[in-house]
Image 1 (cartoon, one colour):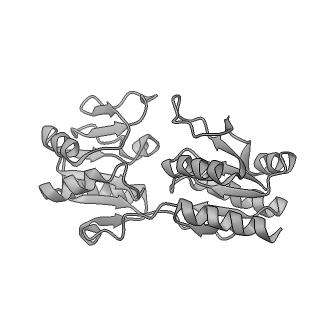
Image 2 (tube, rainbow, N blue to C red; image 1 turned 45 degrees about the vertical axis):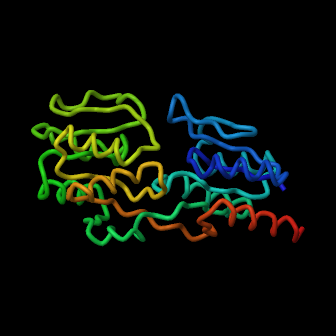
Image 3 (cartoon, rainbow, N blue to C red; image 1 turned 90 degrees about the vertical axis):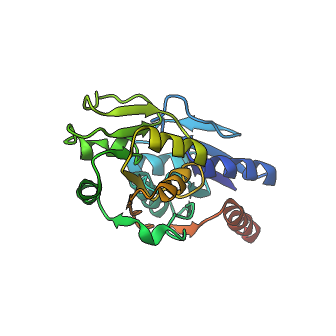
Length: 248
């Protein structure tokens, strides 16, 4: 068995630890979009594959027996490439996807939206001092907010200068409730924008918004693609791989 882990997430790093402990041969792959990524244990490659065809060639050349897509829940392009490469090579694909935030008790009070334009329109009706925490790749959807004192949090420096009234913070989780409360109060935030990323690294902003009575707008996840078997925990992923190895 040789597993290719498409990573870049906390779950992918935890999976690398578990695979190493189980004695499963694996390699982690990072897209290379972050200049200072948190590296998993074990062998790591950094950089793209050149689309689905390039990934399929790599899988065949490296004699990969299983692909685990442990990328971010909103990395739809990479997930699609993984499925297409799996179909082309006959290699099974597991999708390790952290549970979303929809099961939280407060999720029913949020405004759920299917697209970025819908997120922008909904937020415009709710406030004028938004906290945009949906990732730097979404910021183009809000570029027209030149008149709003937006607070933006990103992992790395923006490549394009933001509007003058925006405050941009470079930081990465995990975050605490006390820290998020202080942040929202300091910037007088009146609406929070986020993706349904799930997990605990960035969920404190949701707790803080609820504590302060600030409305939350959430971008819904893209659906899991046919052709990938979904698991929602590292343990379940390792169990599936071990069972597949035992069959051979």
